[in-house]
Structure formats: structure tokens, C-alpha cells
Image 1 (cartoon, rainbow, N blue to C red):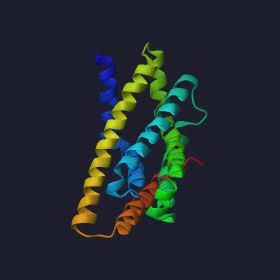
Image 2: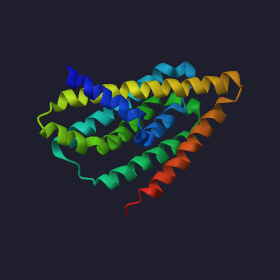
Image 3: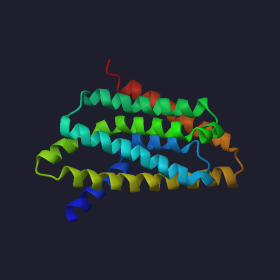
Image 4: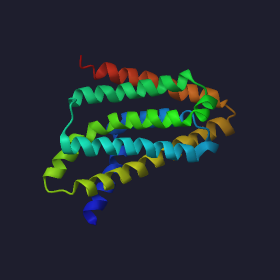
Length: 193
């Protein structure tokens, strides 16, 4: 059991490490279009991202990845850019009416984010580790860390939108624009072509 808890902690630590800024940026793009009253939908969406992430980690850990690590890291930057553009292209009300599409997009991007960890999990599985246990523990930790970040973002949204009376559309556009600029920077920094 202590080994399993080690991997839960590893997932939490990953999300809160400075190396996870790209993951946090993607979470920001997910949070940007959901008003605080829609928190249940957001939790389901974040969990969908974790499911996509976990599926790719599992499959790539068993079978390897057709993509190089530099290409995967570049694609992670692309998911941030596309997520931000998706937010900027459609209103929050549109996102609410087309929630099913949000789930498809987020699961798809989760598949790409999962490739970034697959090499580490492949090594753990072949060193005598229990891949399913390791993966479950890690992803539960990631989910807990992500939900804590979502709570912080929502706390900030409450402060900005409810207390400071900034229109929600400004909040949504501002968060998405920051994510877009940073995502473009990541793509440039990780350029592999």
C-alpha cells in the first residue's frame, strides 16, 4: 500500500512542480469558459482530461509511442494554443450548449498530454512495478492536484468576477489570451521541425 501511496504523491507532486506549467496552462484553458456555478461540469471535464491522459500513458507504457519526446512536448504546447483559440472563438454560452464537444476535445488533448509521461511509466513497469497500480496511483494524485488548481482558479474567478465586478467575458478572454500567448511561446521554444 505504501508503494501505491508513493505514486499518488508522485502525481500530486507532478502537478505542483515547476515542470508542470504546461499542464496548468491547459487546466486554465479548461477553466476559462466555466462560470463558478457550473463547477460540477468542470469537475467532470477535468476528470475526462485525466482519463484521456491515463489511457495514453497505459497504452504507450505497454507498447511504446510512435512520437519522439520532443514532438510530444511540442504537441502539448499546441493543445494549449488550440484550447485557448477554442475558448476565444466561442462564447461561454456556446460552450455550455455544446458540452459534449468540450469532452471530446479535452479527452483528445488528454491523450497527447499522456504521451509525455509514458516513457517514465514504461521504465517503472519493466522494473518490476505493477503498471496498473502505478498508473492508478499516479492519476489519482494528478486528479487531486488538478482539482486543487481548479479550486484556486475558481477562487480567483470569484474574487475578480463577483467581488471586483469584472465581466465574466473579460475573465474568460483574459485567461484564454494568456494561455494562447504562453502556448505559442512553448511551441516556438519546443520547435522540432
